[in-house]
Length: 555
Image 1 (cartoon, one colour):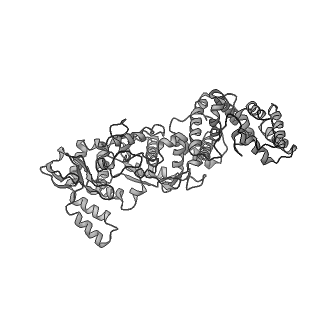
Image 2: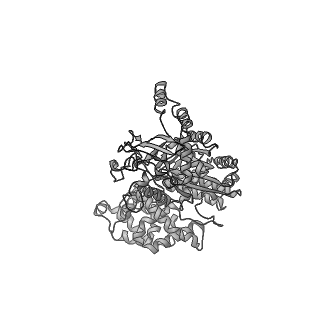
Image 3: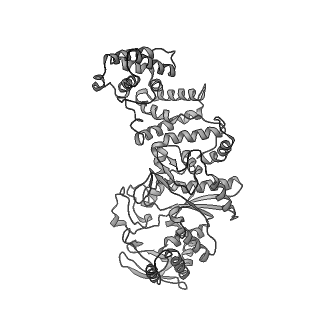
């Protein structure tokens, strides 16, 4: 995983800049809002928005202000398409709100609730705790119904805003057609009380159930369903109504009193849905709207992610291979205008980078004054939990990728013991603190999941019960002579890892074998491959006695 910036380049000024802009609102309670439509498994890109909001909140609270965050689940949006992973029949559900679509897994109240909860369940691990607002429920409140009435009463104003913003880049012919289509347009649609559709047609050919008239004095609404043809004229409070997207957003800002909302570049472009919403806020709801915080997307392997198209890398997957603090660190060090590219194969290097930064904060790793000051500001904001008063040693992730694959051979207790030995050696400890011990097993689990799902062939280790005949058939007499010397060396307890590595080299040269051949011979006996982790530490991990017995068994 990388950002577009080099490791040492931090662009943290955005934290202070955004916080200062938000403080200008002088609110009694600062509300930073985020949101997402649950159209399938939600990718980790949304966590950039949610963590930005969380960081703003933390900074506001740190400076003595009352602030909170909110996550709005847009489960009232209608189905336009399903990702390939969804088994539901699109024809049965297209045009129906996600809140009304069944959960194919049967564990949640709706399709929308299932995929929203899949994301929400990761919030605690990432250190965020927004209030959850379900749009389908929000529209049932008197406050939101009043906001709908305000928008319907200001239909002419909203038509002008839509023409100004949506048709801005149209050519004359397109603009004329658009203006003509807006003459009888209302900024809301109706969920048909007969068939449950909010619109007809799939993605690319959608026809909404637009309101066809509204009488503010009688509060009467007329509509016609484009899916089943049902039409009626009833009072607004007897219908389920949803505002169009560019009006729905500012209406929710108004009802919820949102101070600030981050948004991805697709919504934040000049004249886009965010700017339209701010104009609706000013001219319809008579307030400036929230502070706009645009951010660039998070990408996966150089590709843009898309929930609807099934190109996803979820927060849950991230948590299975890497600590949440690493993701927060990456977001914090990268300017909002820069894209972040997740390369899962680079997770071990990125964890090393983050944990060097952590050690700088605690003063257990040397750094210049600028780096130390940076760590003091940023590191606490990276944490998903409480700040420890002292540094807690971490098992090196790259070591964990190796030993986690050997647990079946070593046994659980022996694996943990070797991890503790590694911590003692790495940090010069006589005893491993309990807090450090508690982090060992989660690290081993993540390392194993990473190596199996994203590691290269070189990272993967598989030890067979016996050395294969294919390997045995390649051994020459000098090879066997060399291996016999290695067995002797393994019984010398006075050799440390560096001395053992050198002694193996010398043993190979003593029988006329080149260094590379010597290592190929040993690795093939141990893991049936021509290369592997650095040999002497790998032998120590496996246990010198075990390695000596395995080699002796084939001599």
